[in-house]
Length: 195
Image (cartoon, rainbow, N blue to C red):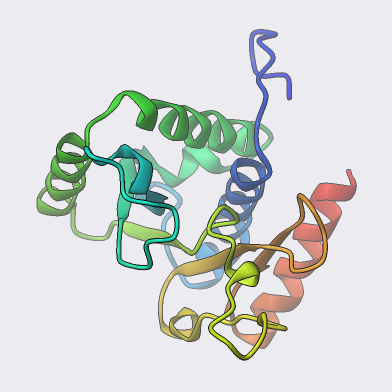
């Protein structure tokens, strides 16, 4: 992807899908909900910290080593218009890349500070899951899942993300919107990728 100023950046599918998802609800769905395009935005996603603990936890560990990662301090206008998608990719990509040099404690401190200092009226968007978690490779003895759904989407400003079951590099994105919002979202989401 080529950014403003001519810089080229390699982006993973989760970064592109996450950024794409952020542009549409702020422009179309947020306004339909009566929200302001100047309202503060907080975006939260999950990061797997199994290999970042000291000593590292084995990849086969089934406990909770996932931490919420967030970035805030942006207004919805950052993610709107022609540059909105590119801005979202840049911010999300920088956030993901910055995790490699941060300790578990510093990540948690940033999350706590963001929660304590969140302004009234802040729109919080969350990603549930990740295309890196390998949910479709999980087998508890009755076979791999055929489909996965996140049941909490209906009441939150969130979307789910997972790797595709039968496609390498594919990403499944789940959202829960009212029917009229879903029609607009699907049209804009698919047309955005086609263009």
